[in-house]
Image (cartoon, rainbow, N blue to C red; front, top):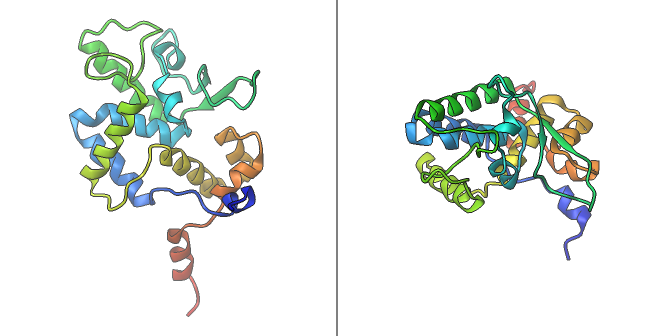
Length: 205
């Protein structure tokens, strides 16, 4: 029987650094991939879950001047209690710029955009569903030539792992992941094969 201690002792399943870069490169190079490119940037840059991403409206992300906010207060998020505290995330400047470009292209196409308009929509102009989001992620993985399949939630694991590797601060990573307990964050502290290889290459031998 697998215990909670066993589950946190195992590293989270993530894409390699090269796979993350390839996913962003392939989706960013194609006009029909830009919406998904922005979605993956939001997932990797803010650690948002799939249902949190598809729930975003223009009014959640953009101020009255049309600029993407650096700090977002989420309306929809994973709830650990009946009366959860508000949750906020911070967006990297690069992600903010991509969001502004996405909305500018929709506005240029003549869409009527209001604060209640979804950020991410389907080809029919309706709010993107989590099912559509997962299907698109599967398609892009095939186009990238990945030899293994990942769930969309893996991108959140990537974001949290990247945050820990960049900061080496588990409390900072806990805040980024919006975990109630630091024990939940422990799965992101395991060294990767890439880190091990870099360290091995630096050994005196």
